[in-house]
Length: 113
Length: 112
Image (cartoon, rainbow over all chains, first blue to last red):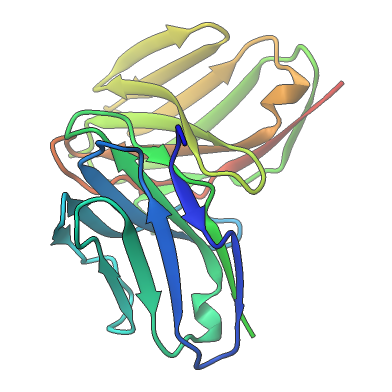
């Protein structure tokens, strides 16, 4: 496809369950970002990859959050032992290089019951 | 106090009105200023991008940055129902790599 895709689009998890959210960036895009967007708020930075290297993970809220991009393309955000406060939309964005626009995917809406 | 403040609205205007959306920020190191539009259940899309102080115009949209006041604005002329969305201001210190800090967004409805 032409844009950033994310799957699943919606995920309902029971508290304590592990979840994995997938991001397929635009082909050839070097940089990949994950954001968390709570209801009524702007996106908040979680982590950044340049190719397969995770250069910044300072926004990950706890050690229950883990992201990887092993081959420099697809990325997975994993949340272990989900809590109700993890309920949010998780957005992925990619860009060609350092000076270019970030293109966002549609997000995965996670609801933790 | 958050780094970027934005009136959340909602803002409701009649079709054809001029819309003014604003953000204030606290970090004087910000140099790159962006406006994103986000439709319901979609990801944000970049509308305007400006560097440092000044104005930038693109069709019906004008972005203004006043670094001395730490205040940025987006004006929409001849607003259309299709402009109904949430508008997010965003900013960063540099573009090489830097976290983009988003405002909370203003919800806009343009009524036909």
